[in-house]
Length: 156
Image 1 (cartoon, one colour):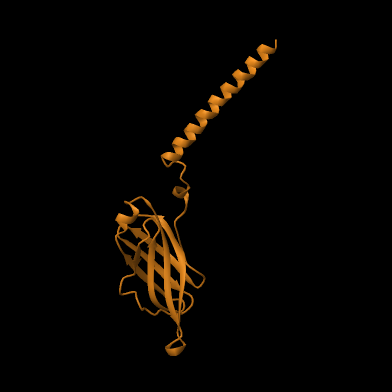
Image 2 (cartoon, one colour):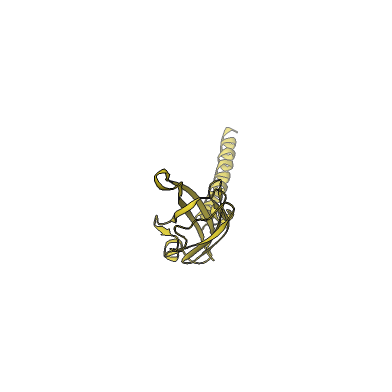
């Protein structure tokens, strides 16, 4: 009688063991092929710091265009986007550098670089680190400040 109980217990464990193994293999295959990649479900966003907002943006192969709204009255000295995938940095177009825009005003920045080689093709997700440098004050009382933000979206 004990032998039948042992055999039943062993069959029970083997049956459920194989079922669990099949489920783990299926989850592994889904993760390998990117179906379970959480970055696919993240919304597009462009985030700076309080006082400077990114009201609209477009990520294309080779360029990033964004509309920045100033709530601080700062004098922009430089602007760049660091590419998360490769670690390289792209700078804003020369026309946007050293622009002064007052409180409440918006400007459009165009950042150009080889985004296609660093981030992938159209339809791929892009994640970049934004850096903005500005000057407060003038002359001997001028202070240079740096803040960081992040941009996430799909390449068009």
